Structures are given as structure tokens and as C-alpha cells.
Length: 93
Image (cartoon, rainbow, N blue to C red; front, side, top):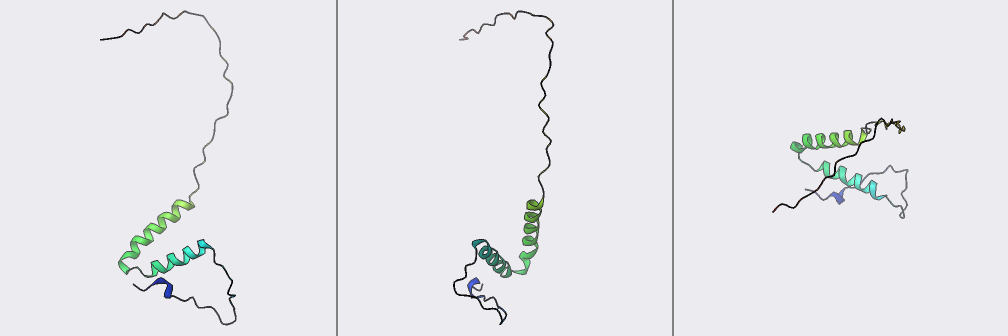
């Protein structure tokens, strides 16, 4: 496998790139990912394509809309009052 850093990205002659330019980390990672994919054997492309397609689908899908029910006070009616029997716990041995 060729080392990924031997690649040189050709720029058109009329564009001059200053020496103090900084490339964001995310852009560097994207470039490096493209270089890694370029070095994969042909047998791996179907699996890589499926994996990347699944990632794209996952991150493109909007989360389902969940409707939150309105909190309404519930009205109740007292019909009768009753006493509950006492409940005792006993230790079993």
C-alpha cells in the first residue's frame, strides 16, 4: 500500500497557496478518508459502499415527530368514602 501522504493534490497554475494556510481538522479527515478508500482493493468496494450508504441514510433521516399530549387537569367526583382494612406484615421463619 502506498503511503497516503505521498499524494499531492494538483492546483491550477493561476492559484497561489500561501504558506500559512491552515486546513480544518474535519477537512483533513475527509481528505484522508478519501485517500484510504482509494487504496482499498476492488473486492472491498461493495461493502464500503453499503456501509457509507447506511451511514448517510442514518444521518439524513429526520427523527420521528412525537406529539406530546396536552397536560389537562382531570376533574373527578367523590362518590363515597370508605375505610380500608389494616394490613399487617408478619415475619416468616
